[in-house]
Length: 193
Image (cartoon, rainbow, N blue to C red; front, side, top):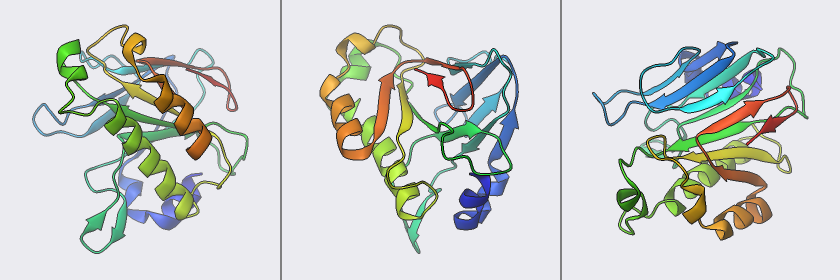
């Protein structure tokens, strides 16, 4: 996967990071000091997406900077925060891929505000990223991938998440989407959302 990714997006070598911790954390710092995405094996004292990794598998994360997916000069695809996958030298077709999009809404009212268009916008960003990867040959056309749409500062938002978005993402784009702040990596082929 790394080779395919870097063959198309060579500048992403600066954004790839591989870790092996029992718990891995993904945080977006854009709303704080205009920072980027962090991928760590330690708690960063910020609301995060947590990836439980009891078998301590080596996981690679491409932390997308702003405008990470060029379409043509000066024009870029929509994108999510990052993509994660098991780190391996050879490309293994059965390995999982996980795309993550976060929004740091401080309460449910802000998260559900129609002007923000969440979670539709979040799912749309993931779909655009996956489509970009497919169009560029980084990702096989028929591969089913996983995605998390996360509100790290909220709990139990799955209850009001539009289930039609989940069904459409799978049917139209082969993306299994879950509204959650946590996943569990069971093996290189299995991730539990």
